[in-house]
Length: 425
Ligand code: GDP
Ligand code: IMO
Ligand code: MG
Image (cartoon, rainbow, N blue to C red; front, side, top):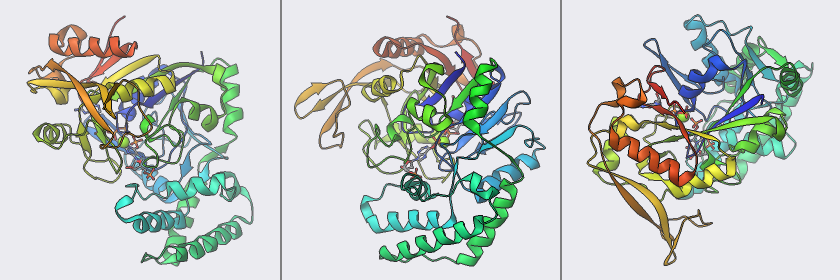
């Protein structure tokens, strides 16, 4: 099948960027299908670290084309910075980065509205990355948005100004103090737009479907994670797009019967950044150790990530919603040195033991029940083959495979491109 999907099964930051980079050599096209610069996808190779927000994670390979799909929202100001980072590393993107005309634009005032909305919520805030994601998708579904293709019209600045003025009036509805200089924001936006317009715009659904007909292979790259999905995540503490498999169909214009493998990525433990329920969250030394050893700080905002044990109830839910065919387990190396590893296998929900994710997973409704495993001490980061992996880790992997009925094809043992063990079966 022509189009494989790769998406996160938890609350984001599972390591999608790293694995897309590892898999890129097998594909002709890498296509981002949703989200925007709220994403931070980290790639490490040849001693350099790169964080991508909008650009697909195949950009560092010569062989593949990279497409920013219609489901993505683009902030020209942030995209410009990403492109400048590529310039600094002499990466030639001009011929291999294509932008969908139907992708929506994040205007500076979308960012202001995001900040105003979050501030007005006080303690109930979502913990948004404040990149303007929610307000931009609201304009998209409200049929008011500006799209990349609009930039090819002579009067795009009129459209920009009309929408901006509307946003400024909307800001007044929020009784909060947001400081901004609209002229400064506008000139920064115009400079970003100029850089964006130096890239090639395409009718991406046409392009991708033609590629499929020509026998080309496509890897669709997701952003965020399944539990941040607007429909299936821990609403309202979610993002504003469909991060799950169906989002790839609407975010790229490829039909469901074109989808082949669905690769689901998860960490050997769980993290979450921002607000919202997280049943297996740890507030003790174990959680602090995961955060320290795993360098659990947001790639976009630098905020500390909350850490906890692997939650198989939530993982099974994500596998089901996405139709995952293969999994990748990331960051097992971070768990080296724990005496005991715990995995949540059921919840105590209103006095009853359940194994599905219920509507209310707030701490007052749900108590996780754990199965314990013996830990391992070996340093995984120097391992290159499956037969070097410690017995106790293999037991842990086999248990997850048995519980989820899904094979774990890749075990990642460090952040570098090379620290990737592909299992043979
Ligand atoms: P993404 O948003 O899913 O692409 O993930 P992020 O890049 O936000 O977060 C994943 C973090 O874990 C990054 O800092 C990666 O460099 C790092 N990472 C990825 N895989 C591994 C791994 O197997 N072990 C360790 N220790 N770090 C990893
Ligand atoms: P990647 O692609 C982790 C979280 C935010 C917040 C909620 C809504 O790197 O995995 P938004 O900015 O979308 O309004 O924020 O979603 N969030 C992420 N958490 N990884 C991400 O992306 C995220 N993108 C958004 O922290 O809780
Ligand atoms: Mg990330």
